[in-house]
Length: 296
Image 1 (cartoon, rainbow, N blue to C red):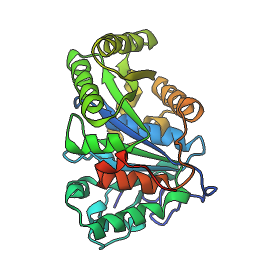
Image 2 (image 1 turned 120 degrees about the vertical axis):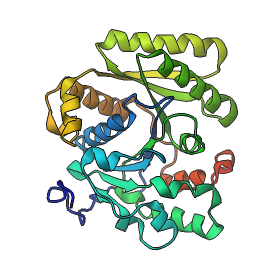
Image 3 (image 1 turned 90 degrees about the vertical axis):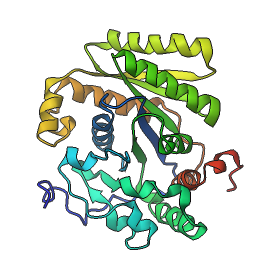
Image 4 (image 1 turned 90 degrees about the horizontal axis):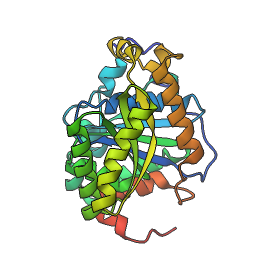
């Protein structure tokens, strides 16, 4: 049994939201592993929930799915059980801190490319039923340039690319931006610097990336902030808690709240007035869908 189950009972439900509002779908990714991507996703989810957002978190890291480990949760089912119609989407969702909900999806995503039309329709319908209870869908992808990362990046409103102050991180981030922009039509990226000493170091990392992309690529990069190096964040990880929850006055918690406020206040809302979760899943299971005109 999960150590946190008494705090977040399985039968908890998101509060209904006003219908026909768009859902933000944010893909959190990185060019290489080990940059803190998953920790950022989980803490951002909690920071958004504390700003009165209903947050759904999709664990889509196929090889190293560990959101459940970070939060001390023990899922019994994942998205593959929805695809096979053994469970409903509501039945596989597990509950995390402050009402965030998590879809364990690691083994299910591998079959996305091979779904039958009936399975496609069932999955789209399952997500569509959640549309009126979700404000933000956060997707924690695998690191690097896998097919699933490309699929989720194409299907999302925003791609949040995490970098750190290592040469390999910048090199691999550039390789990801190049591939997504030149071959898959993704040309806007939000850049987040992680584990930096101060804002200046974060800006310097961003500027390194911009100098190269401005020279060789036709893309738009936006610096959305930084997460500072913080020993309290490491303590929270060891305790299987978010730093936002465990150390609400820490430097990293303040940074997560700033990032959440920026997303809600400055990032453009999806153009679609309703049904974006359905649109997202349609594009996720059929990447060619992104080039088709969406009907109302």
